[in-house]
Length: 191
Image 1 (cartoon, rainbow, N blue to C red):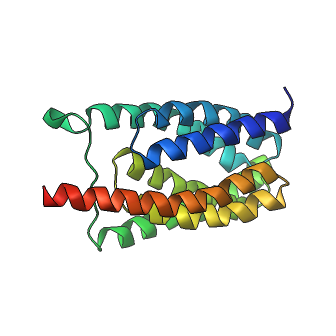
Image 2: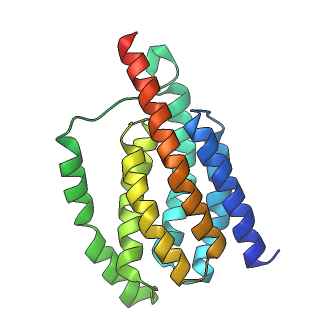
Image 3: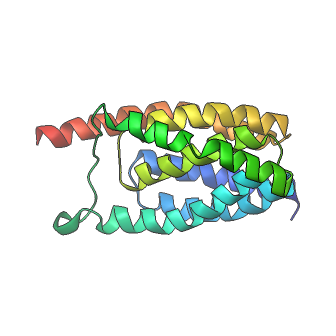
């Protein structure tokens, strides 16, 4: 199977992941696992080292996310949606931003990464945001909108057109996900 075909299959599985995540369907994590396994190979092949490393992390997070969504709610079973106070994101953004320059430098000097600092930006923030999804933090959708907007440029520059198109679709699904999760969160709060 060629790299382009693997990219298409990874993109299809990634769409399935997001569609299921929007619906809070636990099977999103199985699609995430398969998609990211393929993307590790695809990104390594085009020297997006941080993206390849990130997808290795996503493999582990797919297992963690599955467990969290299934058992993270304690005695209540399934994990409910939660929301962060307005103060918390400032600290998260500041702390995460500190990791971008060293990762970019490392990937550039040690691995010859393409667009190392932009790649490091999307990687560092995606790590934090993936934890937010696994814990069902409502605001994850806002973070993903920014990350995926930057990622589209990154993928277009590297000729990963299917993946760039996927992330364009992600932007639409992110808006839908935000609206649905917010509605569900407000319903939880009212109950």
